[in-house]
Length: 507
Picture 1 (tube, rainbow, N blue to C red):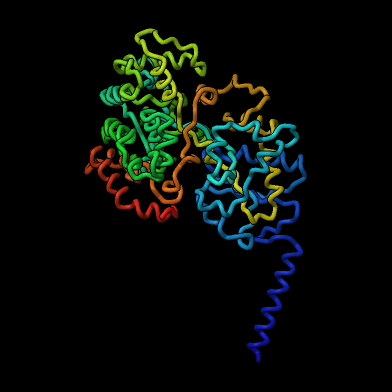
Picture 2: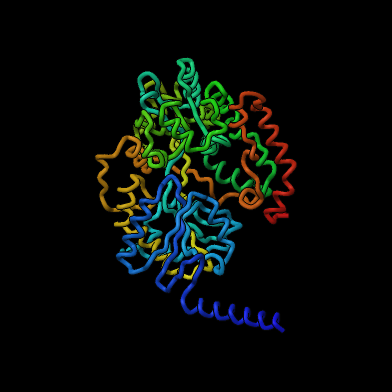
């Protein structure tokens, strides 16, 4: 009897607690949320959170909403909590990396946000958005589960006090990059540094592959694995395409002699700190580098990011074969860079080159593509969020001209939306001005792409079969050859093809 009474008391107590909770708001982990409260969780990435704190303060002042914030350096928090549901997760808005399609069922479509006006404005957010970024954000079902809150360009950065344009010149082509690496090394300057798992070198993979194969093939054949007859096509996945050229070139420039000793074991912060202290001339990195390391006490402060050198073998892929060698290719690239975004003003003949229009077009496209992660710092709203409308209003506010101006002034970086307000960049350093200029001329290549086959997005396949050739090439012993890397990739594709199809629900 005592046990029964105790059980009844426990049941009554739980019912009282649930009813009380429903009357006082959503309570979780000590936070009581009222009708006017929005909870935002943000990942402390290389962008920092100063821009976020500014936006939150202004949003609260101007709209009357209250914002509960939490921040973390753990990039996996969103994935770990999004599946929990409202009972265990009261986050209304995430500002984290974008997630794979398997998580979309937990996310609120943001199409209505795009179709609405930015806060206090009379134009839709979609009309202000960079279309290439929007294309990358669009899911295969036509919905937008993510919208960008930042990011930038990524490629080979360099210490401009070392690669100064006089003693060592910024390379236009991969052949010139190979020569630069050898010259630096011969003069006891370590060319590169990276961190564990190959660091950020992966941002070059897709670019050199797309340069060699061409954007049309990359976007419409390789990514969808479409051979014109069957899709997905295993033959396309195994085709000897630009990926083989990428693997072969990396073998030339990545070796223990050309990499800071210990790079394979460094955490990214340690590697970047060493880099900013002058221990290497170059590092694969991104727009966020200087903001992320702005408090570094490194000896150097003059860093820039080169446009991705054009893969030298592109001359074999040009339709008219009018480019005779790497020297002529480099001369054409110099003319392309001088023209900026106006391809029409580039002459077919110039100093040390003479080409056809078709070949100029092919090289122009290759020169002006670069990796971007503007699709991978993303607003996401749980489909079960209790303050969806408030979360959407925060996004609208974030995209208003006034808020974007403060964002740019804080980060010296730009969101992928047009802004009519003038920005004074006179006090910006060379790196920051360069990044803004890239926004006007470069075509972004993203890790995410709506053309990707479900074999990639759901099935687990990767372009390089998760073979970490960078780590292997830079190991002191047992490094694979490029032929061994390619053979291992092909074996993985053969062994896992059926599981790719099954996991992608295509078989």
